[in-house]
Length: 138
Image 1 (cartoon, rainbow, N blue to C red):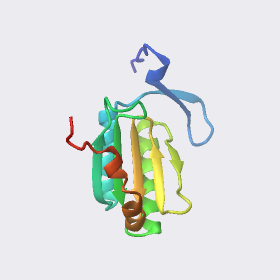
Image 2 (image 1 turned 90 degrees about the horizontal axis):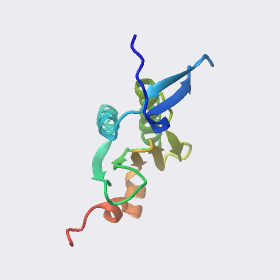
Image 3 (image 1 turned 60 degrees about the vertical axis):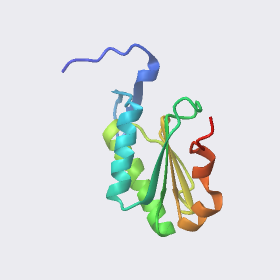
């Protein structure tokens, strides 16, 4: 097996296996690979009204934001949990998660892709899309 030479520490994500085994280095996925994985996971778990917002050139917080809805607190939490698990399996790191316990609004932060999963009523209240989508004014 050929070792990949990393040109900077930001290219590697170092993790331990599930049983506390040795640390291993994974190549950090591109934001395009992450967004494709996120969209696929949300689709598989029947997330509704999925909106993808390109943040490149607008902010340093990430390259993409994804906003989606689940029908209930249980579904919102399940969608987030499956997304986190699939990212861990596919890319070897665990994203940061906020709000999973309440299930009203769960944030999954992969670094390059930020995912917001809402119950419909909470999503309507905050209207996050309106804050980040381009208005067409130049």
